[in-house]
Image 1 (cartoon, rainbow, N blue to C red):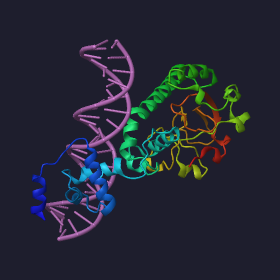
Image 2: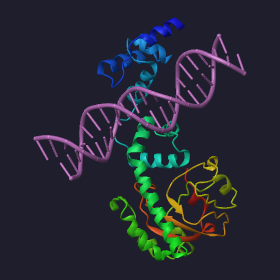
Image 3: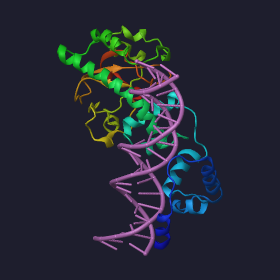
Image 4: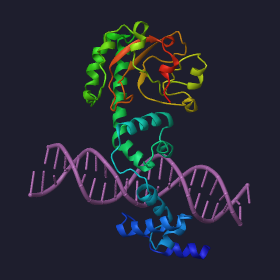
Length: 270
DNA sequence: AACATTCGCAACCGCCTGGGT
DNA sequence: GACCCAGGCGGTTGCGAATGT
């Protein structure tokens, strides 16, 4: 056993891109015999690669059922949602996206989605800054400012499928609760506590991650640490009709509302 | 056209974990 | 319990293509 492994190490192992011939050898072998022990695959398949490389090539490229097309908006929304919940757990995220590999998702995150999130975070920072500087609550007087900021976020307005004007001039959910967009509380909502109807938890990303049982990202709380359901929460909402996670997101309006104004069903997204 | 920069993606590297001895 | 090994995972790198100057 040891001699065999030692011999293997002495074998010159190829690195770099896979040739079509190597792909064919690996595909033929795994299809016919299964991979079993990956370390044995290159030996049996006649490849000068190590087992890890074969495994990676199979999982990320040769495995049947892989999607070769670009990520759909829905897939991106799912990634954003799950990343908000799980962090960089790419393998877990990939389990919710059939035909996508963890490597593919990771690459897409680093090359595109992360930038979109950072843009949104910049918007959020400006909101907080505005509220702090003015020493007042974020009210609708800020909405025009928010809209101007949102224009700096790359966003195709045609992606919006509903008319937001019906809420833009509304005083808040106290009077127009049924017309509110579905607001999805993400990083800052503990489902466990919320199920107890006790409070809306605004943890601003510092709470125990295990509390995050779901994490659709479609709203931001701008006040801090409120745990009282009677409190008014300043929330920046973005919304659309069909797609809950327009990417990049658009900030449409700032609401003041009470947690008690919402039905639980309006807050949950599984 | 030539060069520089950015982007997207495939693959590698190193670490961790679990099973076997 | 210590050690070895394979598998799995996330971070990072390298390179060709695309884009900008």
